[in-house]
Length: 52
Image 1: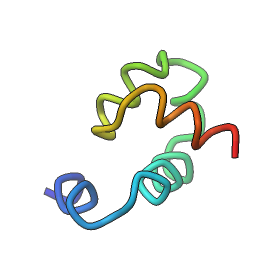
Image 2: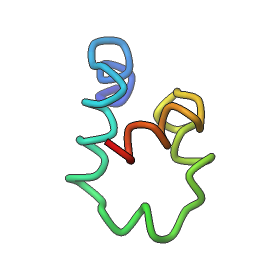
Image 3: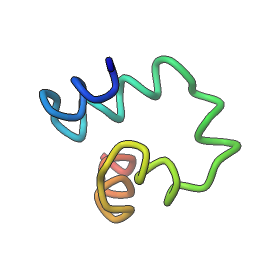
């Protein structure tokens, strides 16, 4: 329920930051395309956010 609310109300940057705060090791273990899918954004968007 909380994830769905985040997806509807937060920007992609905010969603990325929230996951990064909760589970930083996730980005070491899981490919970006799956993380992007979980955050409901394109892999390219996730890549752009991570670079900035």
